[in-house]
Amino acid sequence: MATDELLTRAMPHSAEAEQAVLGSMLIDGDCVKDVMDQLQAEDFYLRQNREIFETIAHMFVYSQPVDGVTVASEMEKNGLYTDATRPYLLQLMEVTPTSANVGEYVKIVRDKALARQVAYAASNITAMVQEGGASAADMLESAEQKVYAIRRGRSAQNMVPVSQILQDVMNRLEALSNSGNELPGLSTGFSAVDGKINGLNKSDLLLLAARPGMGKTSMALNVALSAARESGKTVAIFSLEMSKEQLVTRLIASEGLVENTRLVTGNLRESDWVKIAEAASALSRTDIRIDDNPLLTVADMNAKCRRLDNLGLVV
Image (cartoon, rainbow, N blue to C red; front, top):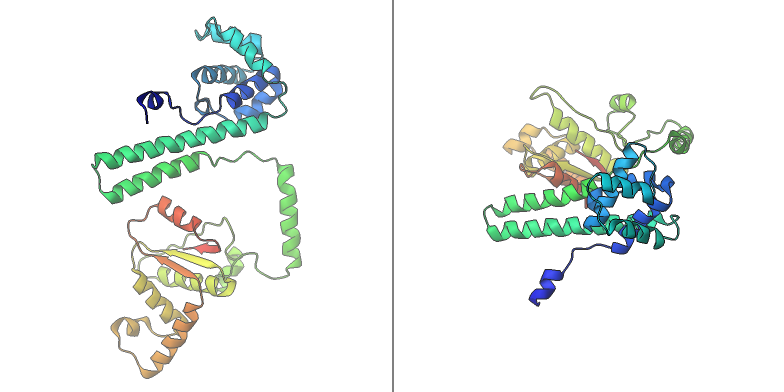
């Protein structure tokens, strides 16, 4: 690639979309609040567009009217005004015939800004690899964190009015009413527990706490096994202490009703082997995934769970 081409190559952006967004706000002050909810100043690639957006954002915060004249005056007050500012503001309003499509313009600007963030992250990752100052595992974790930070920053949800949520709640209440005594979520396998928590429901965060040696792991595995067997869904188990072999041994003990001590020591009776074989057969028909990497981070777990299509429970 020629040197001149390298010097002039620009990052992903759409000057037309940026201009259309700014032009929409200048000709229609009512759409300013919608744009402010979706974009930030750094989403604009061109410096002049970014300065205009920052000016409009400042005026919006202080409830000042937004149009070509007021924005030019504010930029002049802030020392951002040049001889080309007023002609450029007029150009923005001229190239934007209507603000009706401002939502589409915003999507384009956001998409280009996201592409730039990915490019910056890729550049940083490449530089980190070339420097070689860290281990491959550390570089991998850093790379995942950079990508996860981009995804997290773009996953913000809009505020939703109660009137919009009511219909979903009414539909859910109707479904629960028609289901009779059926649990709204997955069963834990313990009827007394199900009666208290109404099963394992989506978005629930349930903490199982007790002193050491009280059976927390055994109960958690029993819940995981019951959920996988009864629902047919995938159950993910992350263990930072016990190995996957130890966990599966406990599952066999629970499913086959064999004392775990005899499984650990190998002091098995003839009847135990029949129970073990039946338990192994039953476990093989469930979709339980186990990860016993003690160095797992929350980002790692999140990434692994995203790859599971039929995920029903995470332990």
